[in-house]
Image (spheres, rainbow, N blue to C red):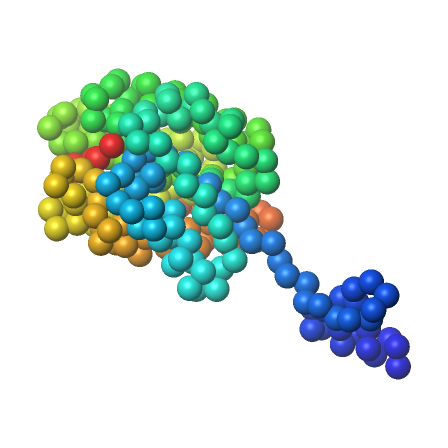
Length: 232
């Protein structure tokens, strides 16, 4: 009889607590994800409740995922600035990172070798810490010329392949260049724009979460690529 009861508790995901003999459910700890980026992650010009990490967390929870998305976006950050604050921005206990950086490098017309070197260092450091990454790509503004665009846009795929991390090709897919989805500065998404970003990125994030839950290294990539100007 006692063996039968034990199996029933196991099937129900219950454990006995203390000597009181009371059963309580075993609850899984939520996955802790850090959205590490610039103003696009920080939610520049928007109430905190409408920032990308908050809206992404809400969308994931609505689909049954136990997850906490921390906002580690800093407006104005280049990839080099992100590298400089990486260690204290990604706390111990982080299960995964959504890496969104590079827009400000492109807007400033920096040599693409600079963001590639900084992102390479960020990915290497996170890999050394055993923290999986979902890399969000950026695209250079068309006014910088086709040659610059080719060098800049291609660096994300190269790094994703080098480190075996999933790549979402363009963070601003469906929003860049759409005046209805951007604030008056023309470069930062409105609340509606953030919802578009979350909607389009959600499948890639869910696939990323699946690898974290399985305890396997995230690999591959997914998500639509799209052209358009790139905010910082």
